[in-house]
Length: 253
Length: 306
Ligand SMILES: Nc1ncnc2c1ncn2[C@@H]1O[C@H](COP(=O)(O)OP(=O)(O)OP(=O)(O)O)[C@@H](O)[C@H]1O
Ligand SMILES: [Mg+2]
Image 1 (cartoon, rainbow over the protein chains, first blue to last red):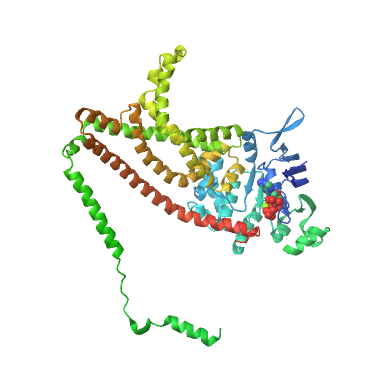
Image 2: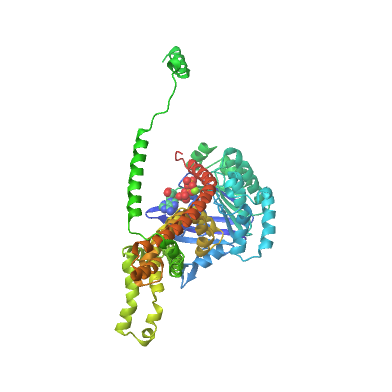
């Protein structure tokens, strides 16, 4: 079995509001899963559960065959120690809507910081790798700039390089282009497409239907905390079977 | 409004002032009056002091006398130590106060409540006299012999001033931490930073821009508050001055002497502070702009009007 991500019966509530109402999901190694759905449908919450930035109330999340955020304890699941959660997060990269680059660090320092501090890798080795990664996302010439001196698209490409520097097994993207001016969207999507082609396993929350159709192996439509419909992107987009999917696609296409 | 009417209005706006009258500056009579009043007041004060029974000549001598310089050193040293205690304790209290752990949070708010509520002078005296009380009460031998050595005037002063300062610094550090975009901590966590690493490597460095300016004020205030340590017979500027004037009765001369030193210290500190603030303001200018931009864009996509 080669599923890299295995989500089983995941539920999560904020107070009385059930945000995830039983999610089952599988992502094979090397595949790209795109998640679409209206605002408030729980897409970000689901993504944040995959690296345990959010706790879950029920169900199970496994990445690389390892239970995420919880450990078995006398037949129950118990939340892990913070240190162990941090260790698990090393192999899951995450890219945010608002980039969240470290504002007090240069581009290069942003990329180098985590492998050195978190994994304890030698700085010169990491620096060499970081320079390569920055070249790959087309920002080799801006190594010494501060995030505030870059455009949104450039910042997001640095954020992708920063996540990749940890050599993750899985990359999570939460609306990576939603905060960008329209003319900057394509440069970020190009980097992501490149990454998908190189065989990275990716879960992408996006409103870019074109990107999903071209790059995704599977497309998931979420609404009200459940997966309403899923399948090959071309199929879901061309012939949505559920009325809610039809309505949503009608609005965004 | 018709087109003609609008054209007429625009023309009227562009016309030079009617009949080309000259523009003259308004006379600021009020300024002249206040200048005269203040000058008169200053003259009265100067005359009072000039004709007063003050031995001006001895002030320069005392300014650099051994006893006063020793007091100056004591003031500087106490300021440094009390501020170090205040900053360390304040940071701990702020971090505890923002922790997920309810026990730590409660401890932090208890600390703030307790130490913000006690006057610094009272605290100094309590610390100083606790030593006496413990000794009188005759606690187990472990304490008995060492009490006096343990709570010297310096330690009493550092504890009294530093722990109060910890409460003020706690508030300052707290607002600094809260000023950092929560996305920064999210990103750090997602990269596998522990909470401690996130705080030390990501949050606190960025909180500095908010923490540093008010900390400058705290240091300046602390320079003055150290004079309270006179009450626990710690050797600083004020106690040096009182020590001398209790013998020669040149009370005002000696108070003037240390006033000069206090002003010198605070002037230097204010100068350094304004330099640092200017530098921070410059770097803040560039970063704030870009962050607001990305934030407002982020919101825009959620459908909230910008
Ligand atoms: N920390 C929180 N506390 C309470 N409610 C929350 C919290 N975070 C999210 N929610 C709620 O959970 C629901 C799902 O949020 P989520 O961010 O997962 O939606 P989303 O599908 O990502 O939407 P969007 O497209 O707007 O990003 C929303 O109704 C939101 O208000
Ligand atoms: Mg979201």
